[in-house]
Amino acid sequence: MTERNLDSDFLEKIIIKGLSSDKNFLVLVSRAFIPEYFDNNIAGQVFSFASDYLSEFNSIPPKEIITNSIEGEDVRRLFDDIESIDFDIKENYDYLVSQTNLYLKDQAIKKALIESVDFVTRENQERNDLQIIRHKIEDALCRDLKVDLGLAYFNDLRERLERIFNATDIRIPTYFPAFDELITGGFPPLTLSVVVARIHGFKSNTMANWAARQVLHGHNVVLLSLEMSQDMFAQRFDSVYSKLDINRMYFGDQKIELMRRLGTVKRTEERGELYIKQYPTGSASVQDFRVYLRELSMRGIKPSIVYVDYINLMKKDSPDLYQSVKSVAESLRALSFEFECPVVSVSQLNREGGFVGFEDLSFNYISESMGVPATSDFMSIIGIDEDKWIYENELHNKIVKNRFGRLNEIWRCYYDPRSLKMYDESELDEWLEDARSFNEERNRAPQRERIPRRGRRRRTEEDE
Image 1 (cartoon, rainbow, N blue to C red):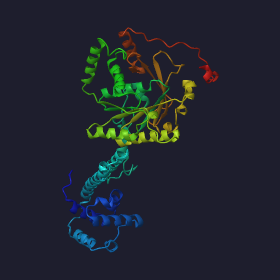
Image 2: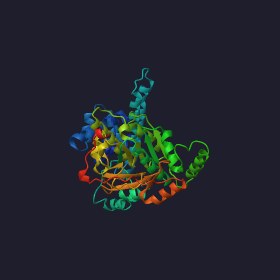
Image 3: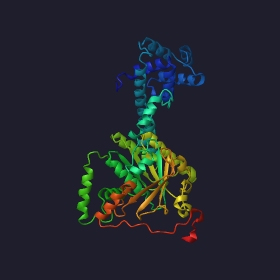
Image 4: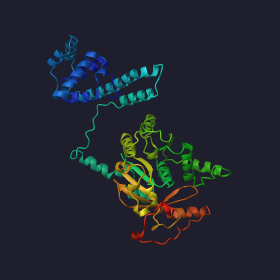
């Protein structure tokens, strides 16, 4: 049964009957209800007394104590009516919980809407009035009797192991084979991953290339941009999907070819959806993201993975950078739990990180706050390891934190500077072949004198 078919007066009476005779039910109701949710004022008073009694004495209050503690004859008449109802709580417990949960949600949203009227109709509205209304509605939508008791290790043994054995079904791969191997198949839900690099270090483009492949494999990808506009970010996908020069594809004959190639991508049968949403730099919070993602969910669009470009440009509520940025990272990770999907963002190296060799870089050189690596489940640094550099248009991605795969490994990838399309290290032949089709060359990296690691010194500003 999916809809309540009991009138509110009868339902409130069997709720009181339930909490007066079953401690588990009283615990459930006490956690989520408030007295104002009851249309019957006396029922609300009985609930309030029983809830307080449970909190203090950890038991159900006897009927005699309730009737003698609440003034008036109405409470006695309420219990007389309840005793006349032929409803077996134990036999119909699951049904009662289901009906009570529906009633809870109805009453919570009704109360939130009534309270919001004053903020909507007041003559001199304050700037945060709409924020207050939003919080009231969101709090009401979250009301639920269901409680997650976590993992019962032995009771859930088989189910847990099956989840692990089938983990590839819930992870979201990047579809760059060598990289996915390093992260054991892809990004898991309920995690925050962060990619770090210097300014203009290919951070956003890495996310765009991961997202482009994920969409082609049927995933719904959401990209939240705080740096580039929606159209500007979309241009990267235009060039990646078409393999056309990002600086020329909107002009002359290239326009027709672009439309043809993107049309082919659009008609891909197993294609997912890509949503790009821009926010003002420094003004957007996780709450803004939450509202947008809920809006998608209400339209039947479940995000498979969420990208945020990028974490340092989000709204900060405190002048203390460590605590503020750490709080942002924690909120992003919490978002991944709420929507049960991976969240991936990027950050920058700090000033000192700009003078350190790639082999010495670690998450200790992240910009603004060590709270980001402390919170994230995965972190990698993009750069160039000169000891392993073979081609000019080659990047190295070093994994410096990894809760779901291998650590201190380096993923090598290649990119086309025209289209910004990236290639996995296992796709070297394809990268070279694409260059030949466009009459381009893949130049070897310049040979430099290899200085033993112990002999290297840290670069200074004078070196620059």
